[in-house]
Length: 305
Image (cartoon, rainbow, N blue to C red; front, side):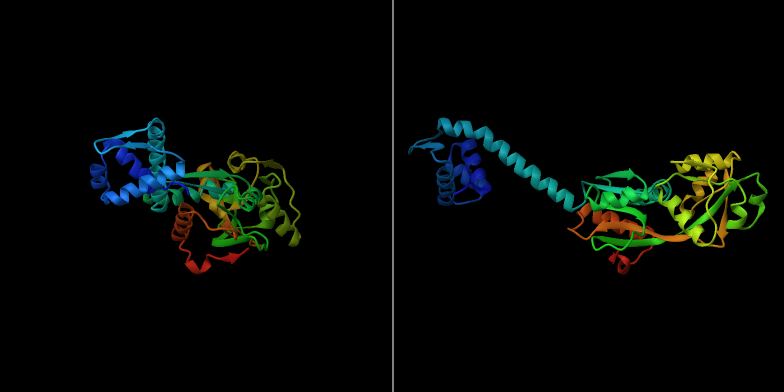
């Protein structure tokens, strides 16, 4: 037999009052039921906790030693119960999400703002990593969800599409190219090209798609950070192409952005999570916020990657 929370509450009530009648009234239970709870607790622990006479009740030495332990046990139980209740009601909790830099720096902040306005007690940790690491972190269970380009087919991943991201041209504001209404890849690649370093998904996608259309990508400058790419373009070192998600960021850095075609390079972007297990309450609420912010219906929620 093991002690129960009911028995623990019974012990503390009697230990506080040293009176079975008062303790039973405090607990709203009958004296026989209270006595039974105390007897069962003593049986579970292996000895007497109280000395009972017709005139008084006192704690035994063991009961006196158990008193502070019981108070701490009950406090821990109550605190744990309340903490879990707050998690399930989204008053507190924690969720980790990985996002590729183009999304983390541009589209993610408004989503997090909407989430924070609704669930101010939830702590959100954002891992700003390249696309491949997003998939890796989700697959290994280091984060509950990630935002990335649609991954290759996998039985272990679910993909919730948020939209299609199309590449746009990035050129210096003073360049004659900035006066055009749109550009072709042939026009863009006639200039020094600046892009992200491998193994960036943006870099790999551009190389693959352009080569398929007969345009081998010749790179003049490369960097690990989109911000650096934007600054280089703004300072006249060359041109670039980035996901449309980054357009405001590039303009803010002093560059100009234009539609880009022949070929149009685009790819679905969305939320990635594993098929194993269930999302926490906080992560489920964050996924719902993603859908709301991108106007994605529930029918798009469970596409196997």
